[in-house]
Image (cartoon, rainbow, N blue to C red; front, side, top):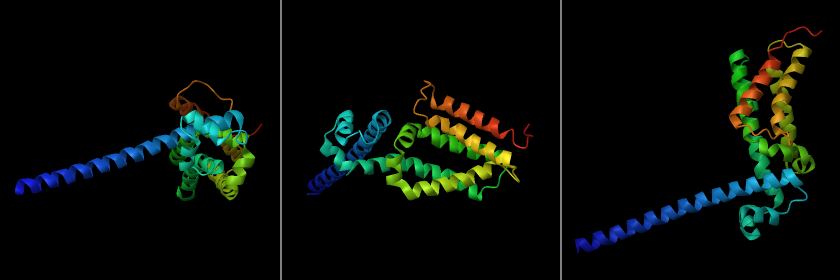
Length: 215
């Protein structure tokens, strides 16, 4: 009898472990599919525009049915919000750090590096932001207003203590330098690490002129 009970317990444990493994595999598969949908949508949005891209085209590029795509996203705008929203969330997280972090050369380098990291990580989103601003505004109107206000405070922080008008302009220029990574036409064949190093070096060089006289 004990042998029978042990066998039953073993069978239950095996079934439970199998179910857990299936659930993990299913979750992993769903995550992989969503990532593939994001990549396909970002590519199509950047090359042919948000309005001209259909969910059917995105599904075909991923290799799934349109019905399967609807399982993950109920509309094209929801998909846009998922792609661009991740970028905005990561950007907000960096910009907010400037509110509590005192300016110093070390903190500037650290925070500027974090800003560059977000831009480089999400640079495939750039063409959609620049090309389909109307669609982005429709999906993120209030969020974009908040981001713009936060970005201005970040630029003021980058300008350093007691900045001159020229210093504030240099800070704005440094941020725009980093934004070059979001250009739709920028295809250098470089690695993310190389792009990060160049952008950080360029932005730091602009800020390094802080306090210099304007001739």
